[in-house]
Length: 76
Image 1: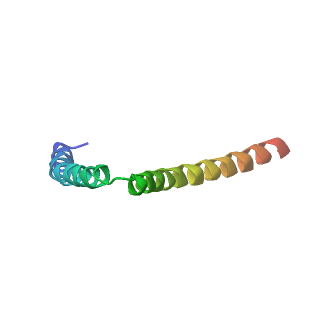
Image 2 (image 1 turned 90 degrees about the horizontal axis):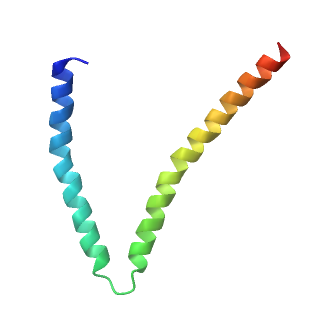
């Protein structure tokens, strides 16, 4: 990787880190101040749902590719 690419990536990572970090603090403050904590539980469930779907899709795709390769190798 060239030095220019590395500098470019580090610059954008540093700039966007502050924005993401500030957003997380605001969300946490709003969710912690609620009495029933139902909104916080809903947000946590949504995060887990959004995190799990890509893993399930990639695992399924990997299994299909493995299965097709295994079948072709067995019949050869």
